[in-house]
Amino acid sequence: MSLSCRHVLIFILLLASSSLVAAEQISDQEIERRVDALLQQMTPEEKAGQLNQLDGKSPATIEMIKQGRVGSLLGVLGVKDTNEAQRAAVEQSRLKIPLILGYDVIHGYRTIFPVPLASAGSFDPQLIEQAERVAAKEATASGIKWTFAPMVDIARDPRWGRIVEGAGEDP
Image (cartoon, rainbow, N blue to C red):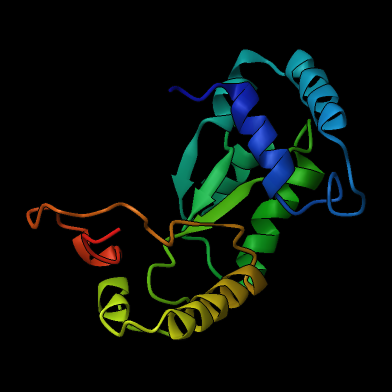
């Protein structure tokens, strides 16, 4: 299934923390209405920009955000940098669409825990849940709203290089 700009915008409106959604509870119909209104205002370049994901933050990236040419960033860490990037999107871009900020929080954010495969070997789901809760709170406090964890693929091929990021082959 391919993602359209409409899907990306719905995802952003549901996920991103901004004045657009944080201060109020909004219905599905209201989200659809806002997405339709945004899509009608967007240029083809801005629509393509919502599908553009960059790694890190630089002055050139901030300029692209202001131009509506970036929809998400990976690896931007710390409140100062995440706030700077988000401000460029919601205060200095034409349509004020918030960014999605993501990071690979595989086995902790600031507090590092054992890799998921090792945690699964503990056979202690409550302990794993506590560790994941710490990672989620730390990442959220830093401005990250999209993580690539937990990885729930059932990994059965040891040649796959990221097998350690899952909990093993037993569903």
